[in-house]
Amino acid sequence: MHTQTQDQDGIRPTAGISPAEERSIRSQITWRLLPLLFLCYIIAYIDRINVGFAKLQLQQVLGVDPAVFGRVYGLGAGLFFIGYFIFEVPSNLMLHRFGARIWIARIMVLWGLISMGMIFIKSTTGFYWMRFLLGAAEAGFFPGVLLYLTYWFPPRDRAKTVALFATGGVIAGIIGSPLSGMILGLNGLAGLAGWQWLFLIEGIPAVLLGIIVFAFLPNGPRQARWLTEAQGRWVETRIAEEAALSGQRQCHRLVDAFTSGRVWLLCLLYFLLNVGGYGYEMWLPSILKDFSGTSDFVVGFLNAIPYVAAAIAMLVVGRYSDRTGHRRWPVALGAMASALGFALSSLLHNPYLAMAALILAFVGLKSTLGPFWALGTAFLSGTGAAGGIALINSVGNLGGFAGPFLVGVIRDQTGSNLAALMMLGGVLLCMGLLALAIPEVSPPAEKAK
Image 1 (cartoon, rainbow, N blue to C red):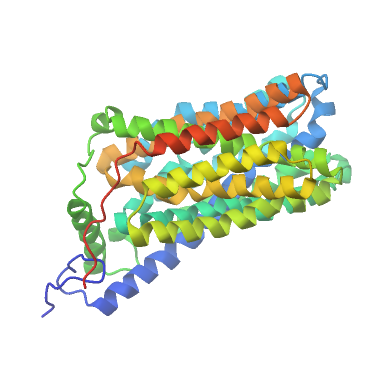
Image 2: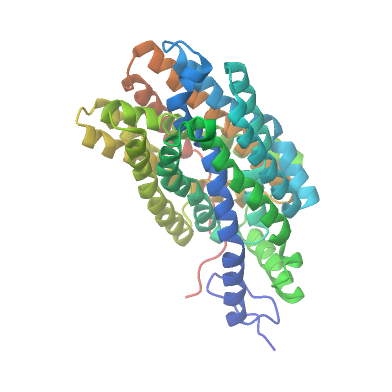
């Protein structure tokens, strides 16, 4: 008979599950779920930010005066997040009700079709509407996956797990940047412009992956065909036990999440993070084009460099956060490092040093994601988790509207990147200081000696 001794994480195993079987279950969950979700996020992120490359050819298509194109593009890029904001919470509540398999599949197929439909835009109005619809279609994907991960991974493992998943966003930059640069080179093939090929080719994988998700993703541990009924129960029991041992007051109801001061503070922090992040990502190809003067193809490869560094940093910081139980300090220090990078990039005249500073800015802000979402999911459960995670993500992603738009306005007004980069640095500095106000989450239990 299995004894109720503590395992290496300080949580008592459920009767009938041996330590070897526990390790096997954890490994199965990781390898059965994360690669597919990781790949889905890569495609989601490529479809979200490829407009930054399309911008290099869109000005003539939209017939916009170069003097105001910055704000036109910034508004269009940012409208994605307005659609995202409006439909985010309802989408996550629907996922909680109907299950992850059908809802994530629905999201992916719809956003893939809309992304491909971007090839038909011919005016600023069409550009605005398609970006809004793309955001509405994708709403619920990222918070839906975060909610889904809480069904499988206990709080102690979430910074590392979220970091593993969220590196899909930076891998998207590594893969998507040179890929987008190459696709733009198809300009004129079969009568389509390079930017049309960009949206068409990069939209197809979302539809195909949506079909795969519908066929293979289980709604939860009890529905996984590769786990026995006892193993499924163990996963659910372990998560519930660790949440209870964490000592955190759980927001289980929707009203609890919407009236929680901590949830709203996290909304503000995520808003500031996304002002900096998307202000950076949506404009980085143009900034690199300005100071390098190279071709779109070369800009694509240069654009990938910060994403490589950020992917490594995310995994290292996520593992550190889980190992030590620290959440608040990695968020604060990462944001402050990003602020420093933005400030230096605006002041340095040497293009190589400026590029190094831009890399630091991106590494700092991306490294906060694992610890941030570990904080954001530690005290949420049930419907409160569905609504709370979506609220943080939707309000926070309004920063994705504000960041690109503000950068565009500032560039149009000043004619340079300096003031825009200083603004982004100031936003990240504010985030770092505010992060220190978040109550630290104690580890669930001390590791067995």
